[in-house]
Amino acid sequence: MTVQPQPLNQDAARRLMTLATYAAVAVATGLVGVKFAAWLVTDSVSVMSTMIDSLLDVGASVVNLLAVRHALQPADQEHRFGHGKAESLAGLAQAAFISGSAVFLLLQASERLYNPSPVQNTVVGYGVMVLAIVATGALVMFQKYAAKRTGSVAIAADSTHYSMDVLVNASVILALFLANEFGWTLADPLFAIAISFYILHGAYEVGLQAYHVLMDRELPDEDRAKITAIAQAHPKVLHTHDLRTRQSGLDLFIQIHLEMSRDLSLLEAHKVADEVMFKIKAAYPRAEVLTHQDPQGIEEPRAFED
Image 1 (cartoon, rainbow, N blue to C red):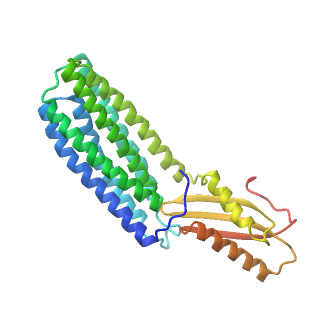
Image 2 (cartoon, rainbow, N blue to C red):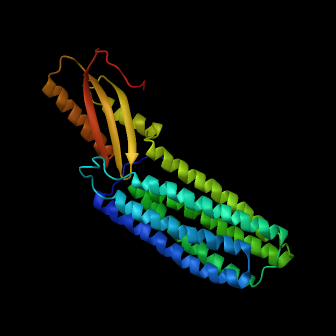
Image 3 (tube, rainbow, N blue to C red):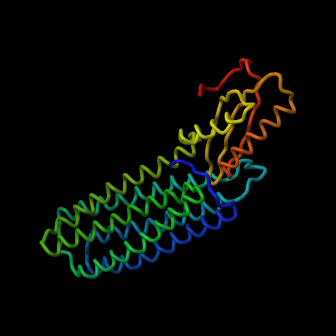
């Protein structure tokens, strides 16, 4: 996902992130209750699958909430770059939660394939699934808004997770319909098995995104090109190299070497570097930007080629 300039200041971003995490816990907790009641009434393995998924959602969202709270703590003497990677650790925990729910669901649905049973009281199942779709859909919209405005990896991962839930709940409605109207009792476990594989795919995506942040993966190419263009737009910057970028929670870290005429004084070169730094920070308000001045024509070891 491309990192875009974010208009929110740090305090507003923190408030929005906190609200998004509390909203996820509240919605998931409420859905566990209504889905549990629906499962008891319908005896549908598909309904049970969404109940288990919502139960795991509660655990994942609580972990997410705690991690985001920790990630929002300011930098201290022992953590000079802040605590932002706690978000990505929460993403890995979410991937584990989601995978666990998928495996459990797969086992339950496989057993129902060999011992099919009719689905009962499908009207209740329909009502609960529609309620779940509406509640989860509203949560996803809010989370996507919060993730876009804050750049939060954890909330973006949670939003992806709950987006899958919307599709899962819709598929359960179809499974209930096929079982009730056409007597296709196998539709219930088959849909549950398909859901389990879909959930596993989502766990992989969430885990991969968290892994990239923990491994300090570079920002997307379009952002790197934009940063380079901003730096080289300064008339006294002749070239740039050794651009390094990474993201940690709300914060971005950008390092870049600026090549300038060797005839510039140290004071002039420092002034140019500051001007470039402020321009980059204007485009990426939450970035910590470090510039290094190099006289043109001086060969120096480079960590990598741009």
